[in-house]
Image (tube, rainbow, N blue to C red):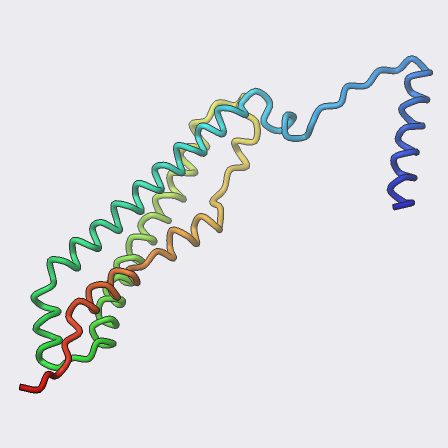
Length: 165
């Protein structure tokens, strides 16, 4: 705590000397300096991108559910023939992972090309536009989406046991 008080005291003395010497200073927060007048537009853009990502994930989830529902006859036959539940889950998970990786790869290519294109089209007065890059956390979320809940839900519906007659 002493070191912090010393830093604050040193800063206060420096400001007092500058004021007594007739100097003036303007303090601008770093956030305001970096975003200049585009702060609200950047928040609006971030919200719009998040909404589009949310809708896209919902659409993919709905497509996977519809696909799983349409395959109920196939899964029922596999289960009735004697295929264990873990093999049905493995089949559904493999298909979901292949689709996820193909879609993620196509999305990554479009993102890289689209980012370069958008950066070339941005006006020069937008601050730090040339520093735009792909965020690894968002990329990990998009590529990590798979059909685990759908595979478990569809395979559980046809979990048939042997019954005594």
